[in-house]
Image (cartoon, rainbow, N blue to C red; front, top):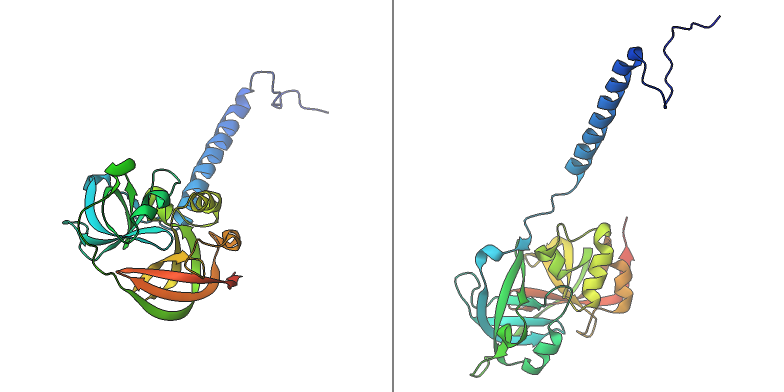
Length: 253
């Protein structure tokens, strides 16, 4: 015989008094469980680092020799308190854009650059202002700048776009950032290889094609993944440049 007094839940009827406490407890446990899961997931993630637009530094203006790797660089010859003489700055435009077309006419010449610094550890980049306010020739003879060859290296790590990695995005690396990184690289933002082991004291290397040209198309498949590769490394001021051998790229687990 059925018990007519036994509480029974029906969605379109008021909740029986005897079940309200149980339902409340289930709801509290469910919401608490979701919060706990979210907290555990966040704690398990790698620290995105301190990379950021350094608006607190204010607009920076320095002078140096423009180089193309083909990605635009400035070898600083006249710095300031934050950007010292001898430093090599990677240059980029606003958003996911390059300043290559603005830099080409000034290659090998003295120029003044002005913009905002992005910084993560010893990796930095300047996002230039628009037009001549951001990049303009200055009078004077450009001093000779030297490139030091450091030989062939086999490295493991990740190809990233230098702007997001330097601080435009957090963390700016990893598989979740692959689509964004590829869009930045297609736009001409300088690509950076993050090595698992320091190379001559640096874990960040500007990466180019084997002939010093743009990153080859086959490398885009490997962006934001853990890979091994080989290439020739050279030092330009205090920045290392890796000339990738595309045939050596290999995914690592």
